[in-house]
Image (cartoon, rainbow, N blue to C red):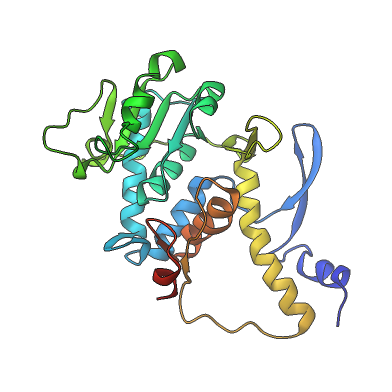
Length: 296
């Protein structure tokens, strides 16, 4: 069996798919994958071509294809830029459970170079100007309306607006709080995806730690971080196959994965959501974890 060093030298040699190069990252020489995408937008483009009409996200009876997801991302990205003036350096927070809109908001925000972060103390610290949040009808959340709770603090937080999703299940007499805009109104018409120059080392995300020792701490992720992780996942499989001399079984098609973790975690976003956007795979979301439902 060849050693790790021998396999690394073979797979990462010049001209190979896993070729490694050294680049300057903020003054520090850094080894990275030469073939990695420069930014998240390039991965999204590839995923739309690979996935096409195949399901990307399934939630109960709902189905969102890769192509439709791509269209919605472009529309929301245009809304962020045209309607809210989001530009490089601005931040967009996402505060919702695993929903198809989470993915749309994530990709839309990152391709126009914004940072994604959660609430409430975190909202105060991150300075996000736009929030995407799941809105619940009155009484669905311990008698308090999540939208009204956050909307009431928008001025103090310096935020421009709160974008609400899943408004179709609200009571007919329910009025949206001030400064809350319906998600459907932003993606309901055709828009051209904005062209924004995004570099590999531009910030893309900020995930917050659990705060077990203190308050949650923001961890910055760049486009290079996320795109390089995609190649790293592929390399792990390729290196194992080369060392064991066991050829991997050719897949019958793009993978179908159940998503048991939140998307606001690095595992859920970087290792599940993002790779399947690239490979054209299908992700199964659950309203909440149910072992019996998961087993079927």
